[in-house]
Length: 568
Image 1 (cartoon, rainbow, N blue to C red):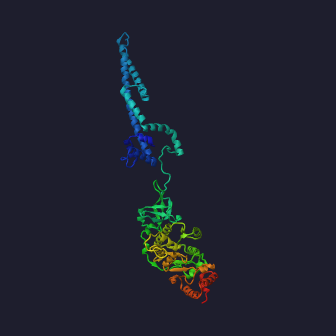
Image 2 (cartoon, rainbow, N blue to C red):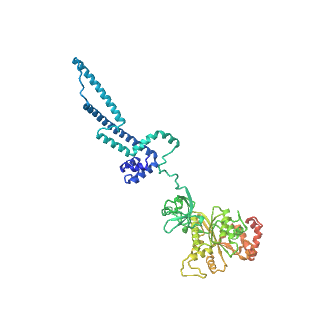
Image 3 (cartoon, rainbow, N blue to C red):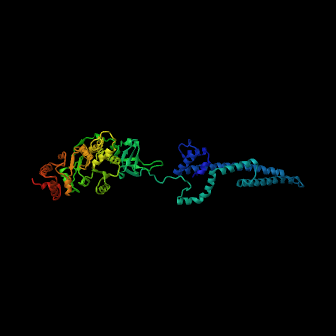
């Protein structure tokens, strides 16, 4: 494996050769240091490919080394051959010739001596050759040969590949078994593969809030859809691609923020308002949907019904798409009535998405509602600013509209619309036209638009809003707000303080409470009997009428039994 020190010692062309063999992209345009780190990164990702390249380099360098050593040894041998012969010729002394009797014997001895001297020379040459092969550094041949040897030694020492190869050959035999058995890799390499990929393993959901610059955030319901640390960033391109709007409930995959990023960005959209993104892209806008009268009634008298819900189900039935208003004086039990309605709808109609919106309420009532009601509770308590009340109300109504566009049935229980109108009046910039009670002329347009969003949609989907309105609080502003909303709803439930003072609950004024076009919600037999009952109660005052109905309802198990028990 390549090391950083080894690669830094190499020149740029050598690094480019290595990068070329490793198929590193764009290696010719990179600087030396960048190329070093690129090779190391590639090595960490593809160790097998790097090993193959290193083996190929080893074989080529070894063959080159063998050629070099063989050529140097041949040169040394030639020089050594020449040198002893010269020395022998120089050091030869004239030997005294023996006098023999005849010349023949001398002639016979000469060839034998020549053979012996030739053999001696050959043996000497062989020994010198062996010594030159084994220990070339100890011999001192001529100056040219010595220079060549020193250059070769310098090249070998300077080349880290050769050093590493020599060390590798020494350690190879001893460490192969250990590395295989332990599965250890080179621990000195600081660049390794990431342990785990975190992109796309976190799935989160939120309601989209689009900023003025075009991007948006998914707000969490845990923080009442206000800005929080759980916000998820949605880019402008994603909003355009999927046709997202403010209030869309988006479920998708997110990744952790990188360096310099503050929020978790959304990387994949799985669901929009519970539907496939391809389906949602072609939806019709809420403003262009056709509103109708409510035609399907909420059954409040079946599961988890109370006396309150049974009486409401008879005298002021609530349908899908109802725009209802509970008009009450203080301390008449309107919040408890809302809670009973919410629990009855949740028990009998689980397909309905229910939102309880509490504006400018007491914190303990918010906690009580969260613990005792099956539904999403969104609250802004009275200790918050008016701008927060307005922001929470806007995102809740936008969320409800987007769900209705996708064909869902939504119910919003608002407590109270009077305080919401007060908050809008506080936030509204002064227009110069002030009504009696200090209400700005343009301030009530937005709460009217909120309340007017309730409608039954043709061919699927409905938005029902049941809101409470305060009267007789001693404030002129509350009276003006109530007068503005009077007659805008298609269901009205009047609560009477005189009845609640007698501790009769629900404190409903039966003769004043009714639903418009209730013939679309009730069957013919029930309508006929309710007309008879209303005629009978018209002669009584509200307290007597409520006492009479309360006693009769308690004696029967359900509304059908109550209607059958009526005479006539």
